[in-house]
Image (cartoon, rainbow, N blue to C red):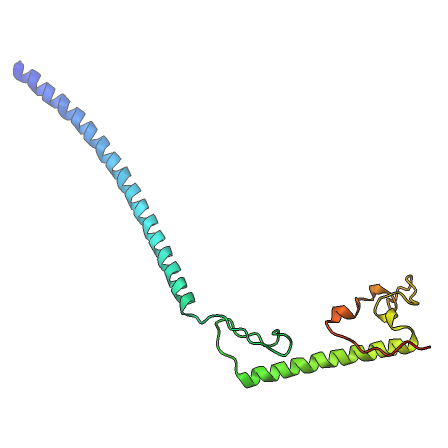
Length: 164
């Protein structure tokens, strides 16, 4: 009887231990999955850090921004921003063409103002007071013509004196 009692106690302990062992195995599997997830996240962060390092190294290896003065106050002569170098002859040709275009525009505006001076006061075309009909929807003599005055052109326009 003692042996039977002892055997049943051992069997009960073994069953309880088996349940605890099964629960421990399940907990261990869950923790293992968590560890694998964390490892994947750490690897993704390492990859991102490597990419950022490569970008920084690439940026550090590129030359600094170079700005050269051009004929239009630096606009036509802006240098390359870390890209391939521009052929100086081609750059000079583009600047010359841009300057010719600006000169042509200024000449055109000068002619327009001279014609306006021949038909009325110069201040009519510049959007100032002087004989313009504010109700004129053509905008020829009003400040709504879009000219905005000589200062908006960034230069000085030689106007003939008003007719007597």
